[in-house]
Length: 180
Image (cartoon, rainbow, N blue to C red; front, top):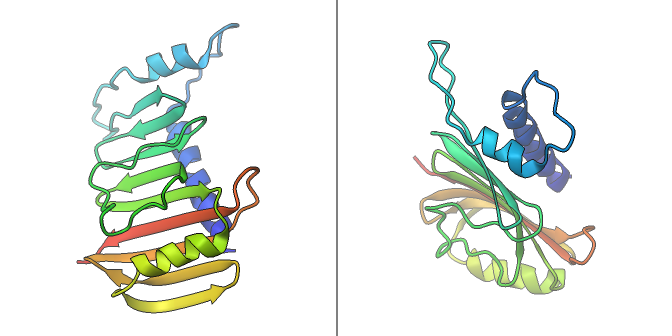
């Protein structure tokens, strides 16, 4: 259920971002993603209404949306890069994972990834990662791990479970918020 909620939040964020980027102009026949993206990359003029500019980029099979407050990257073909500043030394992404989406907003991060390895192996990896954490809630079964707590200056929520995505056995979702 938590995985569905996280996917819903990511989808809602994407919908909101792309709704703000839409145009009333109909697309011309033959207009492709590349030309639409290059038009969207032009900086928007600041207006008194308080609108901010948004940068939309496609690169190596991923889509990135950035503004002054944060960024969102979603994979279309290749794994996306982790956002600058992501504490991968404290909350590493399981080796060989396909990073589907990466969101950074004012120092908070949400990462969604898939692994071809079995769930139990990925859970064992993240149990070691979470050693020394102050755990507020921890639920573990043979096929899932959900943990919430604080570690290394971040409040975290981590979910590892069985994936229904074709070609992947495990889904990983990590959400981090700086502790103030």
